[in-house]
Image (cartoon, rainbow over all chains, first blue to last red; front, side, top):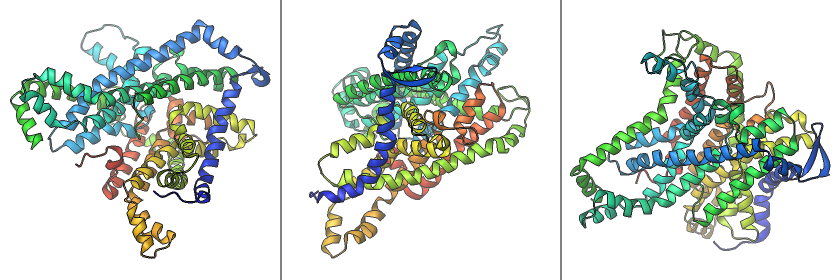
Length: 282
Length: 279
């Protein structure tokens, strides 16, 4: 496009830009500053300090929270890539006349709130839930097992909630893989396994990496699923931030924890961008 | 042709394809099972989550339509619709500027626009709560604060979808209209706007769904009486299972689904979610 005079742009963007500066940049700047201020008697003071970070990064309780958050993120990312790849591959290559419907079904869960999707797992996993009833009924167990609250339940719930993101991401890159390449490899004598490992997998790697990173970054900042399927003994970063701010009214520690979460999330997205992976539109 | 050849090759080797189908069936079960179970247990006669449901009763559904649940549901609908409207209005000029012009500071504006997508929503929620308390806007917590927050987090989606449709529009069309004597406004109104309409609608729908399903931001900005349905469900889960919640969950799932189905009929929304499944 030809460059036009400057004032037009400023008129076009002034309102939304001002809106974002006021309600996105400013709140985050406030949050950042709160993380370096001392809190006393549930009030933020003006005294600068690094104690908030020191506190969070030295207590084993919070180190455990970071570790759990990170492990949950990785586990959820891996599960979703492993489950998402075959589904994406099938959806891209199938010649079924139900293809459109199958794609819609695989993405439909995105339309439901994470609360709703996690609630299904609550119904299944709680002590008096579907899983326990089934196992008791089949005589596999003779006592009810508390499947939740647990880190495992959080992982399953999040993996379920975030699966469509890896499917979308991997489909995006498989769509770019010409099926001729596969037939060519096979007609040249490569086995199905070799064709998959040497042709399909490398070509879909950007989608796999993109899906993993997207899911990881959403999982480490997810609140609802850990709140429903976890408990006080299985806190993750998001539930701990909520606890600090809404229950303990300790803005300093809540803000510092949020900043640590942002920093790790941004570092990851930056690394991903360097590898050419981008967040998809949804 | 290629696809046919490939499928012939597959057929010569049915095994792996059959295995893939089995795996895919399992993934669908994993993905849709919990949702279907939720729907099923809402018809239980007792207030236990028996599956398959014991007896059949609509009493939990009746309760789901009582004011206790209808009010937050309507609140979420109102919030989502206004969010969709406002974020579309704000997204249009942004998308035009970013996708139509080269200017100094463009990169900064891109970063500003995509920022809410990069930062965890939860963090934006905490920051907004702090801002509202800091400048003494406590009384605006609830609907007003939620609206502001939802527009912030939905704006990037709207800008991207509008941007994509602007991007696919040949710039020559505008030049042609201009050289035929149309004013800038007439060109916009009669050439550009009709052609990017589906992008605008898609952006608004994404914004609505993003708002309607949000939890991470809303938990910080809601207040009693002004509370989205997702936050209300979350609060009730602390008291354990209630079949009413299952019924409410199903309703909150069906609403966006119906919306998307209608819009998809009217203006091919699928293109924006998933590029070329028609091709």
